[in-house]
Length: 172
Ligand code: AMP
Image (cartoon, rainbow, N blue to C red; front, side, top):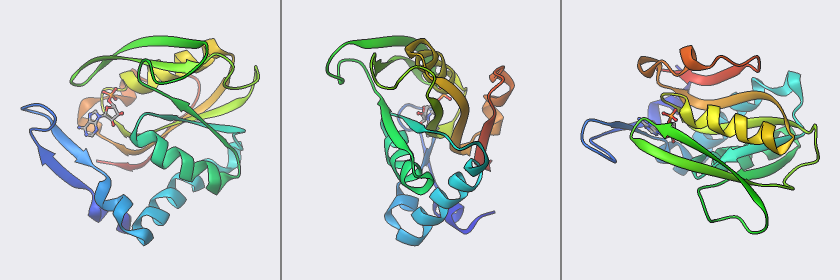
């Protein structure tokens, strides 16, 4: 287990009864752990050299922006509805606890830009699949999906039927 992962915290019954929330905030609060976590994300993707990171609101922004700096590429936000100015594209999706919608700016990236999608946690996989579909509709070339933590008991990887690789820094 990487050292940073010891700071991950399980929060029972959040945000709803029955959900064990995997809280990354103690990792972010520790400078060395945050740097190590971002480095372990970056190490998995240096070979594919993305031109941009697409971070999913909101914890995907934190990790994605840091990862973009580590890999020397740009960052685009994939946001909850109504947050982005200008013309947007939207994608509905299912969550482990409910449903939601993601949006991206229609002109976020030039067509064919090699994009890596980033989020903190892979649960059922619906969020990453929706973000990937949305970015492809926007014209991006999605070359992979990265998460800090994969919750294997929710089998999100089994539902990832995509040619682009899905890589997790930690599988629990
Ligand atoms: P899913 O679409 O089911 O893979 O859910 C992933 C998204 O919901 C990510 O943006 C996570 O931040 C969040 N999420 C879902 N389940 C959890 C969990 N048990 N702990 C922390 N975040 C979660």
